[in-house]
Length: 442
Image 1: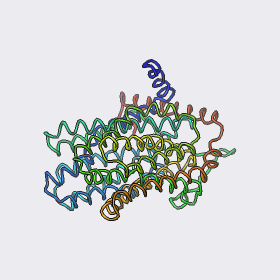
Image 2 (image 1 turned 135 degrees about the vertical axis):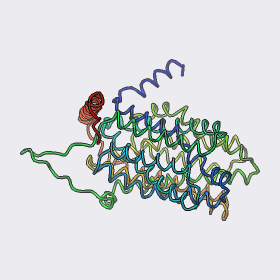
Image 3 (image 1 turned 135 degrees about the horizontal axis):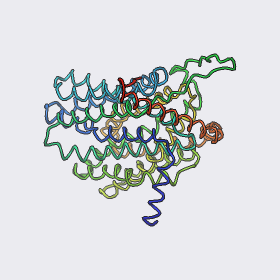
């Protein structure tokens, strides 16, 4: 494929989305570009403050535990309070926690701050996902989520490189930079994005129709969505396992930490380089088929790790399961939006996010236990089996559900255009009020 054709493919991939989406995309990029806390937290706790590696692992696990609570909380606030105020408040809360880490040094204080940061960081995600579903036509949702995921990884790559280069300034300086970047996200949302929560329905008499209140338990009673969440949990466990099991496996093969750093960096490089191309190839494909393929890629990539012995082969396995990640994440987010009722998009995204948070808490502990006990080969073969089970589940249990709920594309496009226009009008109104009196919030 020539450079010109690649350029045309890239323009096609990013064209046709409403301006509001690109402001949301920009806020994601800014947020992840300043994401220094989790990247350097374990080094800060052990090298700067002198805490044990056990304590550092516990603190990072607390961040995941906070996410388990933050995801349904964010989903509830997104539906009841609104997408915009939820994002603004949670971004500001996350910024406050990052700034607090620069001054708090006690064991209990750090644990509490990181736990609250996990709540805030995870609570903002249902609002982002719901706003994308509000603004973008259903036929373009997977592409929009893929682009947002690309921004997340692009920003993270910049943060890792920039943080490593700026580490001589001190860990606390990096945490302050994280706080500033997160606060800037809140400013972008406040200045450039209007509320997109669907308006209440009215009947023929002009009376407001009260939507049935949806709880987390009600969401879990939705059989197709419950199946999607459980299968996603299986995939998330496989996706999280390499981040703990891979360095331990490579160390057992006598490879250095530098070798692991280069191998795991392949994950970010592949996503940044190929996400737009993968999105172009998978565009308009069946969601169930894409989720099946992504699960098989996870199964093959992680399972093949048991056969690896050199950095090059380990890197090849990372490429395989990274391709699975690139297909799975946006497709799963779009499937969640497709199954969710309009008035409960936040709660559905919150429950789905909870599966990611649970995996982030359980998988590191489970992977470490398996490597120390039965051994790394058992871990990787187990991942292969779980991935194959997930693939069968997507193919047999969700093909009809995801196909039937798509609906005709044309009404979705019309509705999305109307929402996008409303967002632009709201943003313009906010800009006008800034030039006159105080800006209108909320």
